[in-house]
Length: 82
Image (tube, rainbow, N blue to C red; front, top):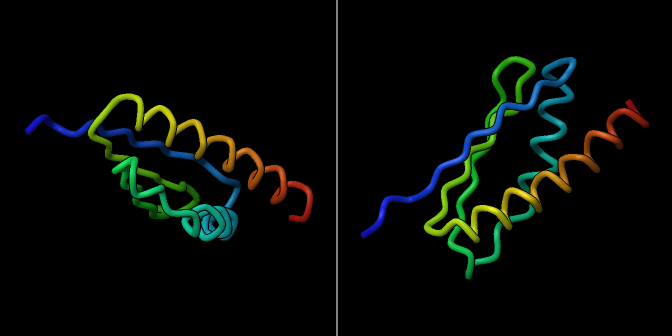
């Protein structure tokens, strides 16, 4: 069995509350089962840490791009509504 690919992202926010809001908004959308990608979330102080694991490069790329699109929307919403 091949080793899984791993990607860790650390996204800084101005405070812990905003990092938690982002985490709670982003973790509600699970990855489709067919991709076999897993995501884990945690907040460390004001940093949102997201870890991905995927068996194939294509799955990782699709999951990461989708996540970053959603993250952009969440960050804009937080900035707009505080």
